[in-house]
Structures are given as C-alpha cells and as structure tokens.
Image (cartoon, rainbow, N blue to C red):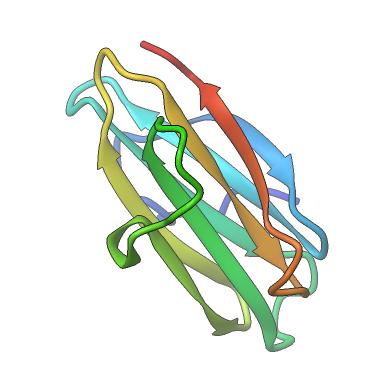
Length: 111
C-alpha cells in the first residue's frame, strides 16, 4: 500500500504507517509548518469500505474529539486529519473494514 499523492498536500513526508485491518494509516509530517497529518488508505481502492483516520496530541484519555478524526465509508482514503505537533508526541491510527477494530499508536513521533 502506498501513500496517496496529494493526501495531505505538498510538503508532507511519510514518517510512519500502521496496519489497521483492510487498510493502512499513514502518518506524515511537514517540517516547514510543524503539522502532522494522517490518512487511512483502503487496501481495495474503488471499493466502498468503512475507513477511520485519527490523530491528536498525545494524552491518556480514550475519548477522541470530532476534529481529531475522520470516519465513514470511502472508496480510497479517510482524512486528512491535521494537528500542530512541533515539540509534542502524537497518537495516531484508525480502522479499515471494521468500525469496532480501532488501532492506535500512542505517544509516538515525538519531536
């Protein structure tokens, strides 16, 4: 699975990825702006699938705000979701194909 061209806009580099079921959550970073961006890409492009992309500044609660996620039925990818994260750790991940199977990496990509 590859990161979609233009998924987060120009200037973002992929810094990690996570298998989230029937897709992959990609985390990117722009050193020019200090923003991270996440998109969850469908393993089966063109097929409508439940996709969930999540990104936030690291914290210990399990509650995600609406602004920290994008979820729905998409044929290519969910997101982008952005957060300003210079000098912070992030939580990111999502789901693909199963809305009750959310995979998150906590306190990663600290910078």
